[in-house]
Structure formats: structure tokens, C-alpha cells
Length: 92
Image (cartoon, rainbow, N blue to C red; front, side):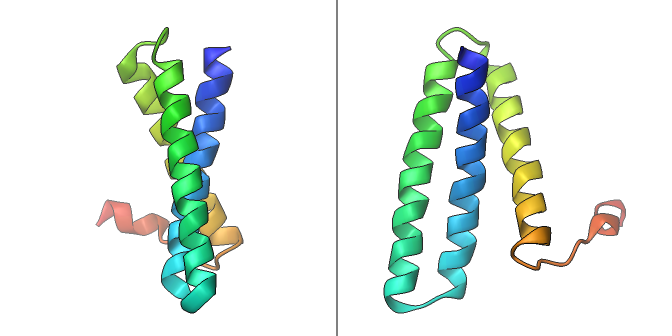
């Protein structure tokens, strides 16, 4: 069960990074709504990570949570936010 909570928490991490990126691109009420989404996703993500670490090792849980967030954010950025894929940049 805690692995499921951890995976869902990682997906909420993707949600809060996506909301943060969209809030940066917008202004006014739209930006405020994206920031509300950011704080909701952040809170849920952290709570689920906390719950998962009650039985899972902290290092393992954090690595999985961060990995889901990093890969998910890149995928969302490329396919939905039109971010340029810069895969070669990590080898410079």
C-alpha cells in the first residue's frame, strides 16, 4: 500500500512542478489559480511521501518520489508545455 501512496505522491510532484511552470507563464487571476494548484499538489505530495516513509526506507522512498517527479515533469514539459527537449545538454 505504501508503494502506491509513494507513486501517487510522485505524480502530485509532477502536478506541483507543472502548476509552478504555468503560474510563471500567466498573470493575474490565472496565475493565482495555478499557484493554488501548486500549493494543493505540494501539500498532497509531501503528505503522501511522509505516509510512505512510515514503513519504507527514507532514502529509497525519496529516490523513487524524486525520480517519478523528474521524469514526469520532463515528459509533461516536452509534450504539453512545448519545452524543447535538450537531452544532449547533460553531456556538455
